[in-house]
Length: 114
Image (cartoon, rainbow, N blue to C red; front, top):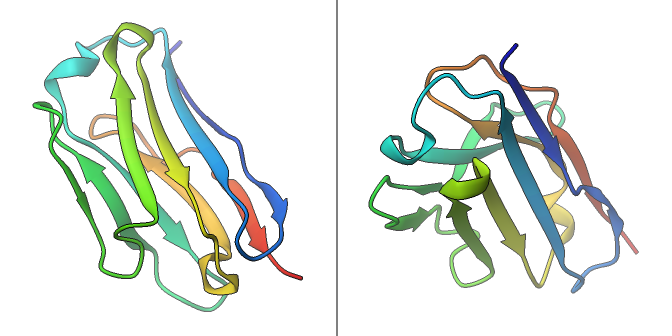
């Protein structure tokens, strides 16, 4: 059974860092052939794209996180990462990994608060 599992969230203070991971278990497709992404959804807001990485390893970011977040991938582990530095309270949200051929996972909660 193919599974998408996100992890790495938590409660941190402003300025702290977190590293999110998204692993596709028992993948039935070649992970490396697809672009992947990270979305987030804050309470009362729509889900928004935060970062994406192409199959050729080109990253792209929404302006609000550029320079603070880094998306990367390890195709040998069917995993995509989101390194989040200099976290701000407005980064508080549930973060979801986007895998084109799978449904959304359960997400991982990130809370930035002093």
